[in-house]
Image 1 (cartoon, one colour):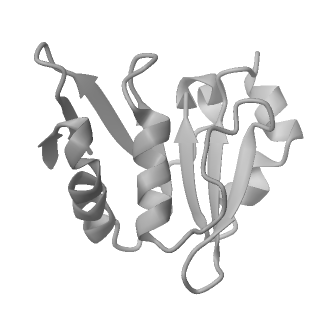
Image 2: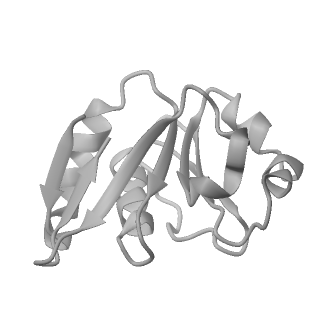
Length: 136
């Protein structure tokens, strides 16, 4: 499992390394404690891919859509506020996941058994010195 160690001041380099490793994968499930930097890291990934929209957490909308440098959609989910996998289904998560577009999902545990088989997990750990380790 690849790992990237970084300080928040080096997040651009870490996000670039992550983007370079994406390959054909389209669904990434970001795990980490509250405040680990999931939203910040995803925002930087989107910026590197060419998104120029206002990047931030879709906490209240549950999903934000950004356009990459080619105009292709990038979907950023924050599922912290949903109470059941059914809510994700009702919001159309299955259609997003089957779209072939990049899907970046925070709090994927809220999906329950609804997690797509092809999804890749991305774990963000806060180290004792404040740096982060991302493994995927």
